[in-house]
Amino acid sequence: MAMSSSSSSCITTALTRLVHLTPSSTPSNPKPFLSTQRPFFTFFTLKSSSSSLTSSSSSVKSSITTMSYNKQLAAAKKAASLAARLCQNVQKGLLQSDVQSKSDKSPVTVADYGSQVLVSFVLQKELPDQAFSLVAEEDSGDLRKEESQETLHRITKLVNDTIANDGSYKVSPLSEGDVLTIIDSGMSEGGPNGQHWVLDPIDGTKGFLRGDQYAIALGLLDEGKVVLGVLACPNLPLESIASGNKNALGRAAAGCLFSAQLSCGTYMESLDGSPPVKVHVSNTENPEEASFFESYEAAHSSHSLSGSIAKVKLGVKAPPVRIDSQAKYGALSRGDGAIYLRFPNKGYREKIWDHAAGYIVVAEAGGVASDAGGKPLDFSKGRYLDLDTGIIVTNQKLMPALLKAVQDSLKEEVLPSL
Ligand SMILES: Nc1ncnc2c1ncn2[C@@H]1O[C@H](COP(=O)(O)O)[C@@H](OP(=O)(O)O)[C@H]1O
Ligand SMILES: [Mg+2]
Ligand SMILES: [Mg+2]
Ligand SMILES: [Mg+2]
Image (cartoon, rainbow, N blue to C red; front, side, top):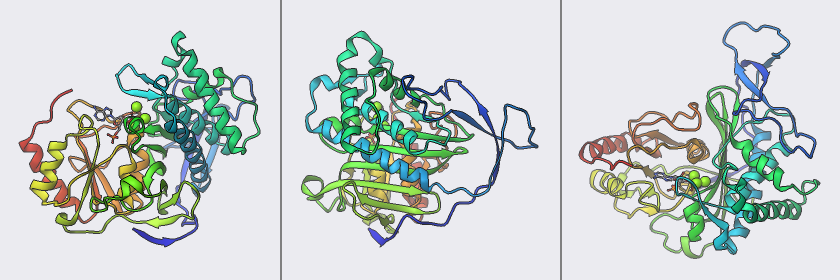
């Protein structure tokens, strides 16, 4: 799986653009938070300017000729690693009271909220001069209810303890009000203009609750494209979890951090801090040798449809590897398997935070992700992905055969409605 050891240097991605910087306080660009502290910075909307630039007082001319995301990538790795530490501590001693049910009946834990706070906090501390917009899964609505006081207290303590133990930031402890405000810094709508962070503070909450796989997934959109991504996977073994390697998911040393930047490749290191190693997707052309990944939860993705595509149409021999979260994208990026299939029930709308980081981790490792109709994933449409039926991921060589198998199987099988 590993190709070579390397530092994080890479060819700078060149982007030329003209932008207006417009001060804004719309819901997608909330005002600075932490009323008790000095704001980290002012929020701005970045709007592309297709024609000539005016010099009005509310707009600032800016020409960005070269664009490297090294600073943002370093901040993202730091943020996801710190959040992973909080999640690991919570998973070790999870209490019944740590888990709540959201309005859509999906679970959320103190670690989901704590992780979201830490990531937002670290990004803003590490990048104090940059505009900040965050599209994140959680909001503070339920935590503001009377019955959630204990939970909010626990989240605040977890966050403050993690920051204090890390020791990088000399700040006074966050108040419960700060925590609520920081959670809601993730309410941006994203979209095709400017830069937006995209965060799933715990992807695979059900896996997290089972003691299985989960990921802290953080990506960055620039002008609607994913330009960097980080996946912290605390329970993912450092060695391959290919279906033939039975020991890996039980006993092997675990804790992987995947990181990718546009045109720079994908790297993996251990969460304990080993040097990053460049990784590449499997280059198998033979579907019979290609093991495949899918959701652990059959409610998230049809196991019968993926089975029919992989076994019947493609001739895949190995049984599916079923794990939670975007750890699937991470494992794919280092060649543990060659295919990831995801077919939610008809009517389910995929969210960008469930795929943004994973998408670039696989793409920069030489893989390709599309919807079931072969269209590239479009992250520029706001909080949801607008796509045809499902998501399929594999290497460049296998994609044509996989797409055909998917199309043939979809004609035969009708997905249940929500
Ligand atoms: N009915 C459904 N169909 C498809 N995906 C669903 C779903 N219900 C929840 N999900 C999403 O599936 C994600 C987990 O994916 P996976 O099955 O690959 O582990 C969840 O992320 P969270 O755990 O962040 O809520 C959630 O967003
Ligand atoms: Mg969730
Ligand atoms: Mg998720
Ligand atoms: Mg989540």
